[in-house]
Length: 551
Image 1 (cartoon, helix red, strand yellow):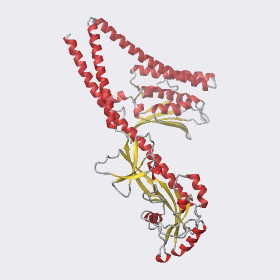
Image 2 (image 1 turned 45 degrees about the horizontal axis):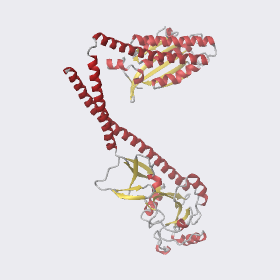
Image 3 (image 1 turned 180 degrees about the vertical axis):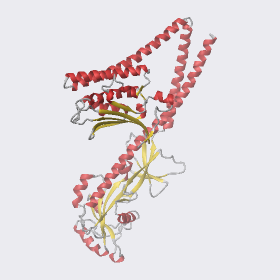
């Protein structure tokens, strides 16, 4: 009984240690999985934002490109573009035509705005102060047309953007670069308007001076900060004008600025998107405390582990006490029966796999075989090839097969005409079954018909292992000389599927087959980790042949 108590105590100690280790592992895995899920969700959201920004920038480029020799002093310049703009995207706040006017053109612009029915046709500064044409000798950027036209948007026509601390430098830089440029975030339409961006695309006259800009204003919330309520994170935009502040949107789409103090939480991840020839940094903050959730899960796992430890110790004590009287013969017999069951289960598994392969061979051979004699011959050969590889695998305890052994005459027809060369590597059981059927399929079609000179095809089968940047790679090449598309029988439907899809997919590689002027060639390339028998590799710590550098 003392011995039994010691054993139960030892089991309890092991159970406690395993429970603690399991809790630790669960804690780490929860954090890892949460990080992976967060990263994937952030990547998807950033990709969607970038796609949205690219579409809006494309709209600006297309719109500016539709202007041909524009007359800048017009208040209906957007009229020809309205159908195209609304057909493309309609989520902009306001689209505008900003004309670059000379001081002498301001009166004409005033008359044009008045005739177009705008409420205030006066040419004025950005803060609504009238401009005196005599007081300036430089071109002035004036908003001449807007879309959509309503009381709020029509009230801002006639304003000059040059005095704006945000739009003025942005327009100058856009005109200098000749590319669409986005502004810094600022209130749109009015001082208390929604925070947004203006994307300006310069319009250049053919051989003449710059004509002006096509602009699109977008709310920042729907452009970059939109997010699903059920997502794992919230998103914020780093303010390009203030290094220690961010722009965030609430559930109603209202954007506000918050200042980041020294104790502010760092974002989980950041992503950069491009819009208007500028980079914008998006910061992502998790909505839930992943560490707290992982600790809670780990605590639950530890509690379950301790409970199971108690149950196991109790059951073990009960069972051990009632089995102390069992003899060694019964224990040996139980062990033997368990081993026998395991062997039978493994045998059933392998037999089922082989039968499934044979069933597939029989079904596809008979389904696509137009000639019963040819189909019977191919069926027998394919089953014989499977039988041969199973025999080789059985001899090696399913630890792999030497590749050259698959070219034995009992499995490959006309093996005497095949010149085999390559390192005698040991391939895995899975690869051996696929390659055995592949070699048979190639060899079974090589003797169908004679060439024009009356010779049987001469076959060269060679392979090599190269050391490439992506890892060791297996290259196999089958070439039949003295044959052509006219003399060689076409591959059967089963053969095409095996050569082009089944074998490459089983080895995780790619294949191709083609005719040259004097031969038929089939090539297969696959990573060595799916071809070679890893047990043999671990045992010898090197391949059967020296690696060749990739050519």
